[in-house]
Amino acid sequence: MSQTGLTENQIQLIEESFAAVAPRGAALVARFYQRLFQDYPEVKPMFTSDPHVQQKKLLGSLVLVVENLRKPEKLQPALQQLGIRHNDYGTKPEQYQAVGSTLLKTLAEYAGDVWGSELEEAWTVAYTAISEVMIESAQLAEANA
Ligand code: HEM
Image (cartoon, rainbow, N blue to C red; front, side, top):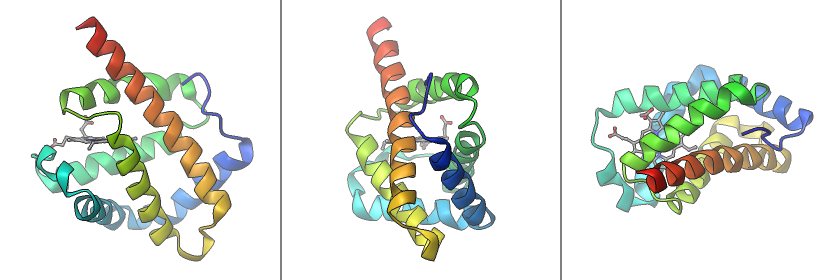
């Protein structure tokens, strides 16, 4: 990710909205998985490890992303590695849409009144950029395997 495609204003919106929900981060990620498995039950069997550990890791990756939106040179290698691991988990490119939509709905639920079209747009741009890096690196790893 040489660039995330986010404007300065969008980065600020993401930082502020994440700071607002972060104290309820554990509940947010638990809710994320609940929604994901409810709306996309077909992905549930892919998640085999301890749900609490998974929830912590997901929250950790969200923190990493938000903290490094201004440092793409740090974010990119971390996301590339994450993408390669996801290839090993059997994640398919088309599944990123399901996870993105679930993440946005969950963020909207926790952000409450401050959620609106601007925040939705900012998080969508960020999630799309993140998924692109993960999917590309997975495909490269696959091609070189
Ligand atoms: C931006 C998108 C995503 C992020 C930030 C993310 C983040 C994470 C993190 C941090 C982990 C913990 C393990 C590790 O670090 O390798 C993980 C595991 C996992 N993710 Fe994702 N993920 C994303 C998208 C997806 C998608 C689209 C799927 C497909 C359904 C998926 C399925 C999985 C599975 C199956 C595991 C392993 C679960 C287990 O150990 O039982 N993820 N993810």
